Each structure stands twice: as structure tokens, then as C-alpha cells.
Image (cartoon, helix red, strand yellow):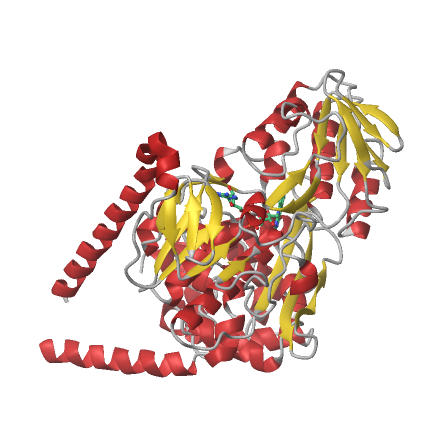
Length: 435
Length: 194
Ligand SMILES: Cc1cc2nc3c(=O)[nH]c(=O)nc-3n(C[C@H](O)[C@H](O)[C@H](O)COP(=O)(O)OP(=O)(O)OC[C@H]3O[C@@H](n4cnc5c(N)ncnc54)[C@H](O)[C@@H]3O)c2cc1C
């Protein structure tokens, strides 16, 4: 027995060294980017899956490919140093959690599963050669799994400039932006208003802006006397869990939240900090503009969709791209019209990661892929203790050839127990993706 | 010594091959993994209020999931809604798949109570008479040792209030909340110290 465990140990430590070596690449290769871009790095020997994007879909897919077949080499390409969770980032804005508490490294994926983490920017794709093009060089793949998240569409906002993002933070990709919005709230003077804008659906996390509205209102109620939150919503009503959110707003934030539906942001004046809409101009001491969204920009660079479209068309059975063979697309970037009525949520991206992982593992082992099955539960805190939720179970329907809703529903009311489950859910799903 | 180790290894191999074939088959393979979004990979829930399900008994999981789906067990709104999305056959396959995984004892921090008084409580109520083998349970009687403490307490309080019908657990209506807290803490500690 001791012989076996020693061999395992030696093998495991070799993997970690290799992984550390890969992580180190970015730094040393950074000096000579242009030349490097065209060279194949990490030449492939056995079966290999490359995953682009270390977010909710990508980390899950990488881990579940390894769980499905540890002999497949998995390389995870991510531009950022750390994983920062969007779910629970509204809790940071309200001051319930620190940014550190929702920030994680990718180390456990390297250590526990031998996944190679390559910290670099993916810049394009060579589908004929089956190579992902990155700033560090070309990486060969047998199967590529792409989960690049969303890109913000600022082009329709007149007067927008890069610096506007710090004045009107979206806080819709967690990290520095989350900290900026938090800081704006903390620095708000009593009586100054907060403006928040909600994009027209579809966008990432339908209930996200309304959970944020609850928690900003909670913060104002307890910390900023006389301050209000003005919610400018491009939709004609709350886009998700409407009744439950309205009930919370009526019961707790009647004097704080002013809800203005059917209001579209047209432009901004960065200097005077004014937001221009089709219902007039608004100005606040803090302003959160959540812009329209489309598939992550990598999807466009890779040729997965034309500039005229917003979401990537996939095959609902395996999540393989309709445009490119051997390229699987997950998460927020996917076109719900081609998948089925699933929301753009972290939980769905996590489920999709498992579907794509199973599909590529089976295909690489000469087996038929299994029918997909997905789940979603999305909790929203309405104050520091209580939450509401929506859940769904989705299965593949042979008749429509789409993923179809099979069950689930809304919480009948808000409760503290759901609030506890909301916190526990983050722990479970973070562990399912990252450790 | 050597021979018994070899024998054990053989038993283990046979058991795991048998379990692999039986553990829900393709149906579970495609439906069970998503549960991890709330219950952790292979059901090793790291939190306080969502239960560990990996390594729980298949018969128990099946019974509970089917009762939840049939709205006969009001212990979790979330799970009643989730269970509504699966066929009975899928719920059974999922139960077998999770039962086949390794049980992971909860690591959640718990309060300390008087140890000998708590042990007497557990003996008096004869918890391990049904949840045999120091709380591992068997068949339709669940493993309780090492379970997520917040979940365990929540369920025991529901039995106490008569919200989940059960003759075996009816004794809880005369047990105080503090006693329940103490037993839950003990069972959690017992799990990671076994
Ligand atoms: C405030 C807020 C609250 C939310 N709350 C919830 C919730 O409670 N529950 C829930 O289920 N969902 C929630 N969501 C939604 C969830 O965050 C998204 O649905 C999820 O992140 C989608 O996963 P993804 O893999 O598609 O994209 P992401 O998680 O965004 O991952 C994309 C990754 O790809 C990387 N990347 C992109 N392009 C490149 C490139 N060219 N090179 C290298 N790396 C690249 C990015 O850096 C990023 O790490 C919330 C979102 C927000 C904003």
C-alpha cells in the first residue's frame, strides 16, 4: 500500500510543478508578445481540452472534464489573476461582505486536478489548425470550451468615454468596479440621491439589479438620512421575481426607492455627472449605470457570431457552436433562443459547464454524448437577513430539440432561512467550481 | 494480516464496480451532477444549512425526494420545487448516484455544550438505536453524524413542531431547543472526530 501512495504523491507533485511553470509563462513571455503570438506553446501530446475563461462556466467545465477523465490534459486560459464572484458582489456593495471574501485564486484547480492555469489574454482562434491564439502564444486543442461572459455596449450612450466607467460604475463584473460603487455610496452625503439604471432584458442575472436596489436602499435607510435611490429601468416592470421584489420595496423601502420603469439611458455628461434619458435628466451623488450587454468580445474575435448579433448560437444538445466544430460555448454568451428558456445566471453557467464537459469527454472517448440537463436556483437578499428565490429544472425535449423547463418556481415569500441558504449556496457552488 | 488486507481490497473492488453499474446509470450521470451547485461536488456540502447528501443512504434519499415531490414532506420549499422537475425514475437514479459517493463530515464550527449531559441525552433518546453505528444509519434511517448542523437543527425543530409526520421522531415535542442544539453540536463534532 505504501508503495502506491508514494507513487501517487510523486505524480501529484509533478503536476503542480508543471502548473506553476505554466502560470509563470505570462510574465516571462510578456516581453516579446508579437513574436510569441504566432508560436505554438505547450505542444500537445495526448488528448487535450482548452477552456477559455475562468469564470462560472469555464472553471466548472475544466474541473468536470478532469473528473470525467483525468487522462485528458486541461488548460484553462484566463486573463485575470483571481476569480471574483459576481454572485454576492451586491452584498459587498451593501457592506455585508468584503471584496476579499468573494475573491479566490485558481490554485486549487491546479493542485487538486492538475489543471494547467495559463494567465493570459486570448486574442483569436484558428479553427482549421485547432489552435487558440493568445498573447502568450498559440495553444493546440482537440476540443475548445469557451465561456467569455459578457461585453458592455456603451456605444449607444452618447458622450460615453472610457473614464466614464469610473464615474458611472457598472459594478456588473465584480472586482474593482464593485469597490468603486461601494466607495461612492460610503462617500454619499446625507440627502444626496443614488441613481441606478437597468438595461432591457436579456442581460446577465435578471434579478441582479433588483437585489442591488434592495441592498442599496437598505444601506441608505440605515446610513444616509434623506437619501433616495432612483431606479431607471428600461423594462416595463421588474424583470424577475417581480411580485416578491415589489413586496419588499413596499414593506421596507417605500420612502427610499423611486421606481421609474420604461426609461432608457440615452447619454451622459461625464463632467457634470448627468444621466440623460428619454424621461429627462437625472443626477445623483452616486450613479450606477448597468449597460446593455452582448457576448464576450472573444466570441466575436473567434468568429463565433457576426457583429450584427448579440449572443452565440449553439447546438442545444452539446452546446457546440453552430458556426465552428469542436468549439463549445457556455454561460452568459449563449443565445437562449438556441438553447432554451434558461436565464443568464452563474448557476446555469455551472450546469452548462457540466454538460459541455460530459460532451467533450464522451466525444474524446468515442462515446455518444448524453442528453443535457440543467438546474438553476437564484437567491436574492432583500435586506441583511431575508432572501427570495427563483428555481428551475431544465431537461432536453426530444420534440422541440431544445432544453425545456420541467419544474421549479418562486419562493412563496421572503424568509431568513432562504437568506441562510443564499449564503450557503455561494459556499457550495464556489467549492464546486474552484476546489 | 496480509491475506485479510487482500481480501478487503477484493471486496472493495467488487463493491465499487457493482455500485458503479448500479449507481443510477446514464440517467444519474446526466442529471445528478447539477445538484452540486447547492450541495457541493459529490454532495459534500460545505455550508451550515444545506445538507451533506453524498454518501447518504439511497433508500432514505429516495423516500425524501419522492415525498417532497408529492408535497407530503413540508421540510423544504426549495426541494419541493426542485423535485417537481424530475420523474420518479430520475429521483431514484440521483439518490443512488449520491449514495455511492463518499460522505464528507461537516467542518462547520459549532457551540460547545456539557459533553456528558449531551451524551446522556443521546443515550436516553436512543438516537443510535435507529441511526445505528454511531449515527451512520441504514436504509430509510439517515446518517446524522457529521451532517451540516444548521440543517440538522432546522429539521429537528420541524419534527418537534409536528411539521414532518414521523412516529419515531415524535419524542422531540418534549425536547427543549437547547437540548436539540446540544445534540446537534455533539453529532457534528462526532463526525469529524471519528
Ligand atoms: C451583481 C451580480 C449578481 C449576480 N448574482 C447571481 C446569483 O446570485 N446567482 C447566479 O446564478 N448568478 C448571478 N449572477 C450572474 C453570474 O455572475 C453570471 O451569469 C456568470 O458569471 C456567467 O458565467 P460565464 O462563465 O458566462 O462568465 P464569467 O463568469 O463572466 O466568466 C468569464 C471569464 O472569462 C474571462 N475572459 C473573457 N475574455 C477573455 C479573454 N479574451 N482572454 C482571457 N480571459 C477572458 C473573464 O476574465 C472572466 O473571468 C450575478 C451577476 C452579477 C453581475
